[in-house]
Image (cartoon, rainbow, N blue to C red; front, side, top):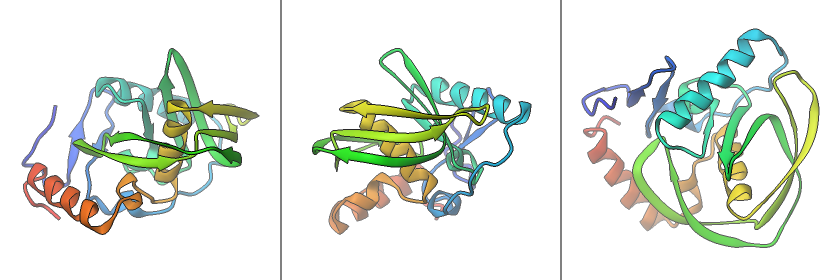
Length: 177
């Protein structure tokens, strides 16, 4: 359910998590590493998946629900990924494609990103894995990882495009900046 009159710029969903909408200040803050791997973390990850699926998203990062921890989930092409404390090991190529964001409902823009990426990440048990993504999967990984650093997809755009999106977002949120 979306409440366009909500001054906190949030969307409440069944998981109990609220997806924050731009310009919520937490979206521009850097997240802290996860150092506690327990049942609470596992439940939070399941809640992130539920929230993402409820809004037909491909990914969702903890800061988008007000939690400044390096946690994100991605689900694309029938594969699910948990990204905890992710780090880029290698990237190559270049692609340009349209991106949207659950924190910017109904807003899309072309963004240039690497075509392929290799990431070191932890799972909900604290085990370290290396994963690779190509094309749209790489784009989704990098988009969610940007959220963990307080970076938004509009930060890749020209000032003109970024300002146009800010105005559009203001209309969506009722001007609550």
